[in-house]
Image 1 (cartoon, rainbow, N blue to C red):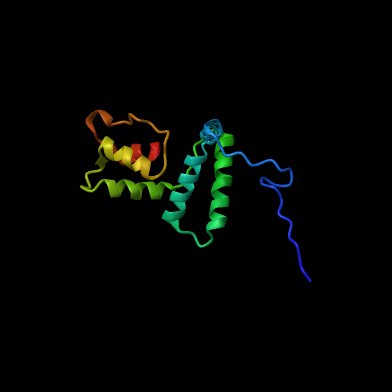
Image 2: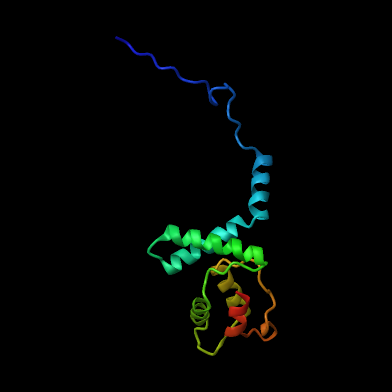
Length: 139
């Protein structure tokens, strides 16, 4: 007794080969992701996930996506970190304990928490001294 297997044509039953994404498709995909802030949202969620290490990561991700949806509806930014988390982050950058950080540290901290749209000239930037309150309010 012999058995014969039938292999469908390339690209599926229609016989049409799948197209390899070209530059135009890639640009369209990039534009779509950028339009909907997908990379930033995922980066913020992943940063929070790694920082907080919740018992149920899936539940955490779902909650953060729901929070993002609610924030968007209200015209607010998505907050992954609590105020306490941001204060702790500020203290990490304020290694001298003087109550302020430099503009360079401020920008680095914003990048660390995944914030891409923020006040580039916060209070104190002229003197290169951003205090904790301004940092937290802008994060």
